[in-house]
Image 1 (cartoon, one colour):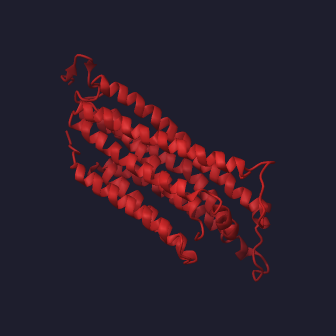
Image 2 (cartoon, helix red, strand yellow):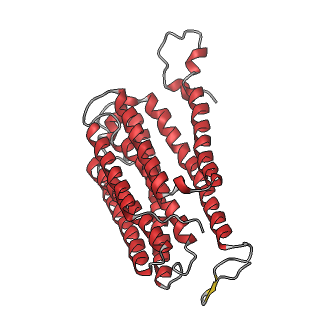
Length: 111
Length: 218
């Protein structure tokens, strides 16, 4: 049987890294970086998610089939986001006077 | 062929060739379920993204009304519980019954602490009239936009809380079965796939924390 036994040390190191990243994202939120607050917060969240997936969920040592199933979820999520946001963020492009700022109400007017 | 068996019955279900095939089938099943869960939560994350891009200032203002200390503590608790869960799977693989039972109970306990803190938060927010609906009160600009933030906050943290609650019950059941020696006889698949589920719920919260509590700088 394929073994997944890792030393407890590795799990505690992962835990320490996750807590450190939590402290980082929390403290950075008190500094005003404008849009980069969101970018940094998301980058840290993705790093934490990868740590959990790689070390706690053993993605690193799983079969190709499991990699496929795990990636499929993420790819479909990206399709969901890119198609929907591609719609919302480009509606203004087709309006006759594209100089005006888009009004949120217009998003809801469309069927 | 099924040659492995214990006093409690066969380790391998009839439809599988061997225990390794059974184990990989269970893992694949759980990963496919988690992929559907990604899309289940994904719809709400998408709604959040659209509305936050429309009303960034109001979302930042509304986010300041959440309890960041309680939310941050809860993040740490979930990260810690995931560590215990990973150690529980390890204990099951090493057939260490006593350690397995305690680690499963510890994971469930941290889940209960998480839910208790979440309950305290919801109670505070209810008293502050932050729950969307006729009793919603907002003294800053753009009331309806702030209401959308809190609708998403309660929907997303609520759906997450349901997942944590389910996880706690599963963990307690596993702990009871582990106590009877069910997983230390060579088949610990249930512990392993429950671990995958618990880590996934942890990952959802890893994204919820900065989006709900830290939107805009504080």
